[in-house]
Amino acid sequence: LIPSCQLEIESVVNFGTLVANSKVYSKEITITNHGKAPGIFKAEYHGQLPILIFPTSGIVDAKSSMVIKVDFCADQPRIVDEEAIVILQGQPELLLSIKAHVVEQIIELLNMSSDRRLECIHFGPVFFGSSKIKHARIYNNSPEPINWVAIIQDDAVGEELGTDIQQRTDIALNNLTYIRKIKNIDTTIIISCLPNEGTLQPYQKTVITFCFTPKLMAVGKKDIGPSYRQDYALFLRFESVGSKDGFLRDDDYKTIKSERFQKVELALTGTGLPVLLQFDPGPVLNFKPCFMGERSEIQCIIKNQCELLPVTYHFKKTANFEIDPEKGKITGGGMVDVMCSFVPHQLGVFKVKQMIEIIGLVAEEDLQSLSVKSFHHVYLAFNSICKASTKKVVMKFDPGILPSIRNPTGKFVVKDLAKRKNYAPVAMLQSAMTRTHNHRSCEEPVKDMLLAFPNDRAATIRSKDHHKHFRPIFTKVPRFNCVNHDFAYTTFEKQQKKLHENYYAMYLKYLRSVRLQKKQAERERMYSYDDTDIGLEPGSGLKSPSLSEAEIEEELSSAANPIRANRLLTTRSIASQEEESVRRKVLKGLKSEPSTPQEKHDCSLILTPKQIHQVIVVRY
Image: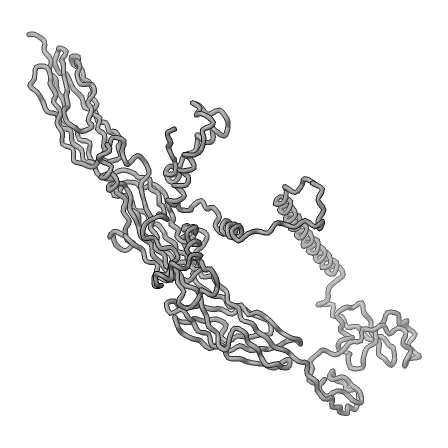
């Protein structure tokens, strides 16, 4: 028998479900020769799709096999069902079926309660300074992982940023100062989205948090009234990161490409309202003068001028003044009665500012949770006088010394002194030089002894300090110092107590010195550039230049909006970065390998989806 070849090949190449991201996918099929002689094969594809077969021809040795590679570029969504012609030696023509299902890489936003698509989030009315949080789910409805990023479209048509949609058009357009002010506002301080970038696995869902914090933008306080409001309508775009547009599409496909661009748009609406409280009889309360221990009251009516939101208030404690109730809640457009009282504990003229805290939900630093905090303050002025009381002194007769510890003795005493509840008086003056009523039998020296009144026996025989000695005013015989040794400190315990006092005093002194050194180090680090002496003396007549209003506003805006790592991207910032990159001159060429430590560090970085989205490729 003459040796012959017997070639066999797979009839179907199935790529499965692919994503239209312009990537090239490969499949391998095997041609097997079961015969005893080499065989020749040939493969041809004459279709219009980006399909490549390699090698297209060859010789398969006897009892061996050869791998053929089929490449397919998923440039756009479609259902692929193509056929390639394969000619095997000694056999009729065969058809190789090439199948694939190319789908879009779809990002979807879903409700938290159901799987319905989300197109708009309504935050509703929110007080300026407070926050409101909403949640949604982002869904990767594709068979491959996807990197996504969120971008605020601050140049979109239909955007409303701090305008009053209930106001007449001619009035709104005439306020040019306010229009110029809102043009340069940073929208990322009003709307935040966390996370605003990430990677989603196939058919994975992730919860994202939207935080709305309106900021008051007013030209003057005179413009803020009960009808003042700022409406916001912003658009947030979620899009995938990568070569999703495709490099194989021609110019005629640009119109279709823009419609199939992998993105989803979400509208965010909300309203900012000011906290407006009306006080009756007014923000200044003048209490009637009163004496110490008395009370002067004024009833104050607080009205919430906002019809849409309730107000929760809290009066801070102020010395010599009382508020009842100190805290409460006022419904929208409602009123509450508050009793303000002046209860002086000292003499003088009182002019104080009573702080009223407005309590509400404020976003935490992570912008993903809320906490009840004070976000606004209102002040009332309290004025009053506490006068000194003058009473007529009425004398009464007291027969003399009594055995019990009671009121001061004497022939005439003040009647009002009996009302006092002080302890028995102890004479603390140095009475060693007093010779009145000296007892002849007392030969004990009287150095450093204190004079005791007749009715202070309990305070002198059980004195707090046992080193003090007392004598009566008449006999100078030292009082007996009663010491209970079962409860008194021993000499060792007294020494231990003294050591402990010294230890804690030194410890507090050490903490104070450490705190002062830390403050001094921070101060030196902050003003380290002042180390160079340029010969200027303080107070020599030099004055700092005065800043203009534009410079002050710019400084305040930059200080109020620090750069955050989780800050949203905006279309304006991306456009300005691209414009700056185009104008920038190239001074150095790229190296084939990094040489410096900084270059090695930069090359080892793994870019996040947000960083990849900001990469700009410019052709010079």
